[in-house]
Image (tube, rainbow, N blue to C red; front, side, top):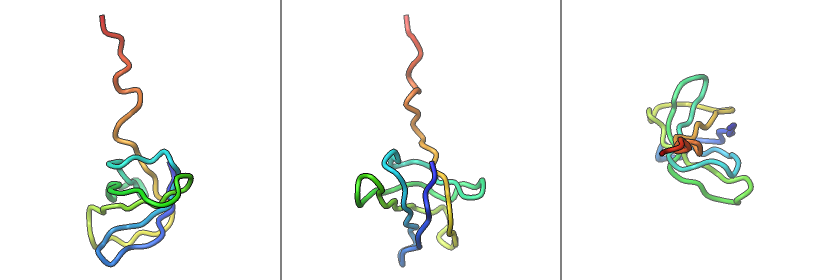
Length: 81
């Protein structure tokens, strides 16, 4: 899922804007590199703001990033006897 990185906060977090399917704990990928994970979601439900904790506090990122949900909704779909 695509998100737009808006800016960096004074405390080093990244703020992005995305869609409602994003989950806390999801991995954020920028140019095929893991740059951080989602720690908070706030704002309107339809198009919330996303607070990202970067792996490296000195990172400078702008533009489009991608969110990879850690927990697949199909994870426990195996049929057990």
